[in-house]
Image: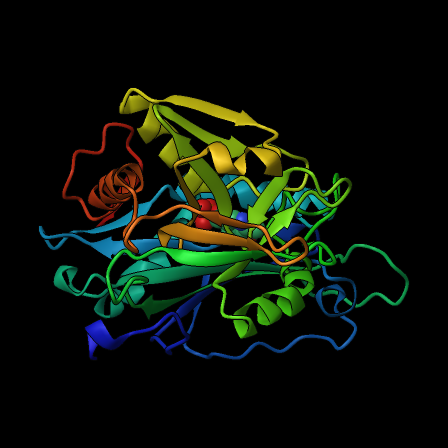
Length: 336
Ligand SMILES: *Cc1c(COP(=O)(O)O)cnc(C)c1O
């Protein structure tokens, strides 16, 4: 395995972990070496989008130990997602057990510390029972697969450019934006592809109702820094990012003021550093945001470098994830 050449793609590993909900109860965790699943063609996940997923990572530290980051937060978020679309929630303890099992069974795929790579963990929950009318399924499948992924920033921690396009929304107020369901991603594919073709990393979505407030940046949360303040948008269509939650804590620990509130697009030019955050990259610093509708440009980074606060937050969070820095909040679970 050429660890340093890995990208963010799927590579087969040895095993996946599965659990079935049938006859009103969850069964035992099962281990499978097959990459395929069979299900009824009338399954609710296929027709009515009854599906939710999660994404987290395991890291090998300089001490050779494997750490998983904030697994209980992902477990709880998947329960919230399940309840919002009437799926059977997967128990938190069982979720943790399944994550640990999936990592243990695929230990040889956890990249070495020096590579900067990690093991991506993908839990999935789907409605598998057939329904023709629009109803929740009676049967569910929970599955976890893992795949090694490369360091997000191969050419260094460099700023990316984003674009605002008002004719596309990712999620509606009080819709499904706050839960991690596939439909939100389907809704963002077209605008995301368009942004890529135009040379941008992602779309910066505004609130769907008024197009006045900043919502999310592609499939990542958005945050802004000005002086001693870390600010991040609040709305009824933003997915609660565990990375953002962690960065807010770290910013507080650094003595910063943390604000979670609606942030108008008008305020963008007042900020010194802005970035997107999520499990995949931790932080993507943003160099420039172009408003494709008005032609206005918002410039941030100087000389193509990430700002000092973004860099400090990034290094601190990564340090905790890899076990290089103390973990005062017990965010990591060590896997033997
Ligand atoms: C998963 C996701 C994020 C990032 O969440 P993390 O827990 O930090 O990985 C942000 N926005 C959307 C829409 C997401 O689906």
